[in-house]
Image (tube, rainbow over the protein chains, first blue to last red):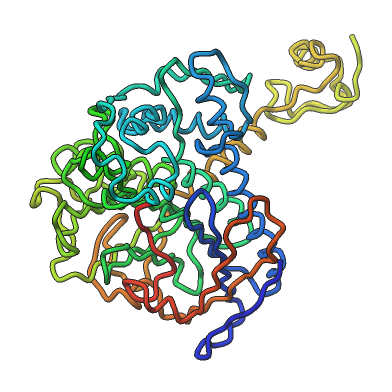
Length: 358
Length: 144
């Protein structure tokens, strides 16, 4: 691995004591991974090695956790559903344990055992392949009935000591909902041993302390919301939207965020939700939950989960309609959260002021 | 009574009423005997009964390092926040710390060393950041 400087013509030389911001991106887990790290110039080689490790780390997790790879742990477990315990690697067991804990934390709105419903909805192959078939894919086919999967995760038997997983028949695991965030969290923690680091896995961010050169905050833009920037540190940020990962079924457009209570695509009333939580994997789950619940139910859900902040765009709304939802007063909030919202009206509490405010 | 190396050492003040008088001269006193009978060395093959406090302190320090840091509130340079989670309005560029110049160095890796190599790196010029929504953000979040 080599590190080559690509300084812009107007970029000034680094001041003494201010680290260089290193950057690398690659593709893994069917998405773009971006890693940023501030490191002193004297430790650039070390930083480069860590950045290279990050790529191996994501590749390893993809091999273990992808449901589309026949040799992955998750695929083996799914094939053996109803056939007794399957031995998995410690890594897979750790991710699954976290997934099950977060399923409980979310009140069942996130469920890693909802694969059957996802496949019934038509998401039975990688999205790129799904799209290659054209917009008419399954357009006229009757398709399977939606399958509610609320509480499925409770039937997953994970033995961490023996590293085995057993599923009841007819169920399957899909860890795609949290794998990226989990991988980003671990990577950011490892990179953080050298300096401020941020790992962005397809929009799910794990941020360590912010770079000194930027005032100790990572500046995170919100896709689709021009002019709005989050300043974050030591926390996770994730965005969920019903306008991504879509396909046609029964003549209608479906998306991958299914409501476990109905088995149908979520239609809570939000188009996009960005959640900020203590870590990326929790932010991922929170964003999904808030998206599913919508403006009516999400405030109450957040009130019981301090430490989570959500920014939501209502269905059919534009950037100025951004809604801010917070879970409590200031207990357990991420380390640094600067919301810089230069919109004309600023953020509004959900329900026209009825929602909780910080 | 087995006499391990730890038996010969005086005890610190944290070890009961006999503490403070410990030392070679106090060996065989009632206090010393009561201490000896309660020692784990008799039960664990001569190993010294170490105080649990170093471990407790280490665990507490680790807890603070891992979890307590989440509670730390870092200052925001422009002072638009009123508290944790507070909100404020300001220019997207500059409000979050653009007082210091930021520049990027792209790290390129040698291709071919990765299994399942599918996509190479996409180096990005530093100036590209200015095209991101919100000005010079470091990165962006989007639905995955």
